[in-house]
Image 1 (cartoon, helix red, strand yellow):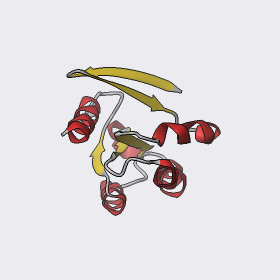
Image 2 (cartoon, rainbow, N blue to C red):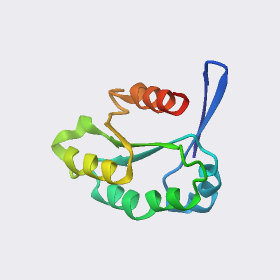
Image 3 (cartoon, helix red, strand yellow):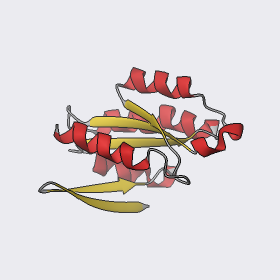
Image 4 (spheres, rainbow, N blue to C red):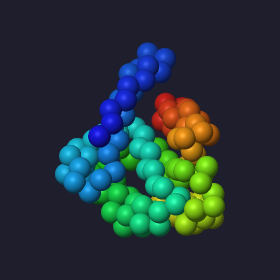
Length: 126
């Protein structure tokens, strides 16, 4: 599990991240009242994308109480393009289906990492 906090203008934004199934009961409480949620999958692992579509997106719809909640879908590990199993088009199509913003990133090279948070925060407070 990862907890992060950011100061944006005069608001403190707390982020919680855990993708494993074992955290599912804990994470449902974090969706309530959330202003923004980032869903991340590994573009080199189809199961990561499938779990996101089959489990996590449904969990958010079930437990999120803020109708204005901004959701962002992020495909990570784009630095490993030769190992890619999920296409950009698949990610974009799922994001559109769920009403999510969409970006691809690489935590390793830091490509679009800050942009994910910046866009989510700006849309959430905008």
